[in-house]
Amino acid sequence: MTTLLSKVFYRKIAGAVLLIVLFSLVGSYLLVTDVSYFLAFICLSLVFLIAFLVLRRINGMNRQMAIFFESIRNDDTATRYPGNEEDPFVRASYREMNRVLELFQRNKEEAEERRLYYEGILRVMTHEIRNSITPIRSLSADLIRYADTYTPEQSREGLKVIHEQAGHLVSFLDSYHRLTHLPEPERAEVSVRTLFRKLESLLRAEPGIDRVRFHAPEELVVSADRNLFVLALINVIRNASQSIEGQTDGFVTVEGEREQGRVCIKITDNGPGIPPERLSAIFTPFFSTKRGGSGIGLSIAYRVMRLHGGDLTVESLPGTRTVFRLSF
Image (cartoon, rainbow, N blue to C red; front, side, top):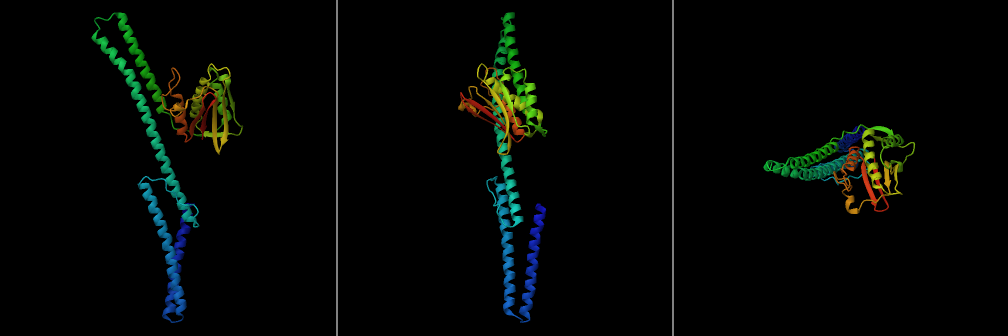
């Protein structure tokens, strides 16, 4: 389409040049032969007018292209070009320029998001590793220094603590590996109802799964990596079902629908909710409000959605409901 429009544009330029040549020849002939000075003046005026219009159009495009490249050079992606130009070629060019700027903006935002994401992981890793290594270092130093005075029972107790700390560190590093080594999605069209049936089968042994209800229209399909998307859904549903543990009227609904042209899976629970001050950290790797929680489930779900170019968001009204939305 763009190639066709460029051909049309160049044909217009070529046509304008031919008109300039033609009117120049006619005007010159009329002037030299003294046939009509008035007609000669008209022809030459048309030559200047056509040349002016062509140069103005070319200069206008050149200015816009210069602004475009200057915007990219200065990392300014806020500039947008009008889409209401009469000339199809110019309109298509502006559309492409806007598309390139939008891609640059998206890549910039994704790079910044990725930087903040991995900075957060690095901070947590540093904290966890230091917390695990410090008692190992301290106890091992004591065992070396006071080996002659320690009873076998005291030595065993010290080694047991060291072993537990080392196990905690290995478990933490395994979680980090799972989070950072998710494969690229292999997308395919899949029925949301089919996904829900698979989830019901996989979660059958989970405590509280009997209070989870699935709903989706028969025709609703999503383009996603089936295994990765199921992994994300399991983590979010598990988080929701754990939040209603011990609550007699607790429930979780998993609904598939279309919202503003996007496929959306909503997971709603009526658990205690998430306090506003913790809401912004809910997808931070290794952040957990549950005793013994790894803080990795929601982070994996969030990462899976980002790999798909989708979103995972949460809204919570403490004491009433919490809604997670996975949108494509």
